[in-house]
Image 1 (cartoon, rainbow, N blue to C red):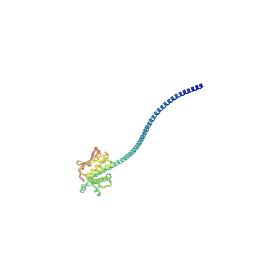
Image 2 (cartoon, one colour):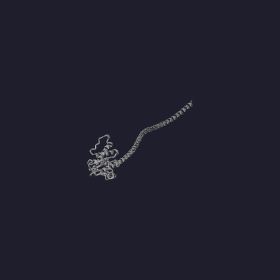
Image 3 (cartoon, one colour):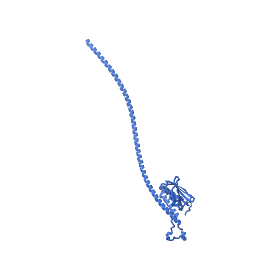
Image 4 (cartoon, one colour):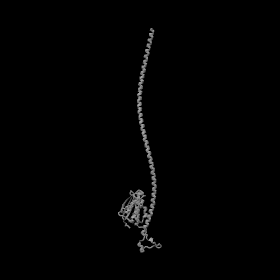
Length: 316
């Protein structure tokens, strides 16, 4: 019996020792587990902070991406506008080149017309001078009646129809024809209403005729000529005709000199001087007229033409 009790007691002691040892290990495991949990909690806190920072970085990156997209759209829009502007500029350049080419053709045509007109004017001037010289040398009706003018030997007698021709129309008739031309030029090239019938010469037909020619030159050739009128009397007949024709010749030459010019008509003693200068005062070059005008009541210089004795001439 005692042996049994002793065995039971020994077993109880062994169980207590085992339980005590196991409890110590459990406490150690619990402490280690708590330490691991605390470490995991610290790691989890660090991970939360990292996640928050990553989310903030992600939001910033998304904002930058949206701004980049907006910049890209803006640049694409500007590129489209630039392409549209470039296309319009190319179209305008092509149109300008076409207009320039057309203007060049028009200029060539106009220059050819001017050249042809100048040639016709030269022929007409030569014929006019011949007629005026023939009129100056022609005998008067009194000379014929008095017998002072007889046909030269071998010259056929003139018929009755020829006896009425005295060398051509006189200066007054030619002046009237020139004024008719002035009215026609005013109607066709100057007047805003080509059907208008009123033409006012302001009491000075010569000045009005020159003003019309200047206006027609501006409309037809694009040359703007300023006129300084310094004559102190109204000229008529042969004197007016000579001044007008001289001015017309100078204006025709001025179209090759500059786009702008100044025309001065003035008295110099008994002569009328017509000068054409450029805006800066530079004289034109009209010496080529000197040979054609020598000995015919006119003289030419670099700046224009002098009509001898026209300032004090009396109407014929």
